[in-house]
Image (cartoon, rainbow, N blue to C red; front, side, top):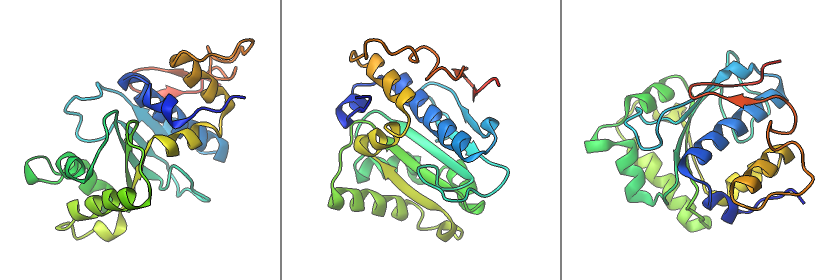
Amino acid sequence: MFEVSGNDIADLSDADLRSLVARLALAELRAKGYPRSSVTAGGNQDAADGGLDVRVECPSDITDSDFVPRRLTGFQVKKPDMPPSAILNEMRPKGVLRDVIRKLAEGAGAYVIVSSQGSVADKPLADRRQAMHTALKDVPSAIQLKTDFYDRDRIANWVNEYPGIAAWVRSRVGRPLSGWSGIGDWAGRGWSCARERCHDPR
């Protein structure tokens, strides 16, 4: 009954979407026993933020990885759809690869673009992934970088791993669950999210 759909993800505001991705990363790392301080997020959705909205920096490699694929992972979160041409412009503004992406490659990390409006089947997804590879064409360390594209349906699948987060999403898009008391503090775990860092105070 807690499940959300891709349409729910598409209805989130820019700020809620960015906060959601940070919360999801935090929840996944917490479940695997990694430090909660590994997740940072902040800034305006469309500001010149260097190309990352949510950053994961774990002190050790992530075993049994899932939606957070590497110990160094950067998420670029966008509400609009991101076709291949938009991906190239995002990764290489004015034709120059963003420095944060180059550093993720050098650190054998991962770079993930999240689009809440995008809903892509196999071929469009392959095209977007190919655009990400094309953007790295002149980077010697590109082979070390894992890239991926999460559309609204993949984000919904991630959300549905965590009932408290799913309930929060439903409340933000006007579909709250009556009788659910965990919305205010993310499933009663005392989570809070400041502008620069999400954390569990325990």
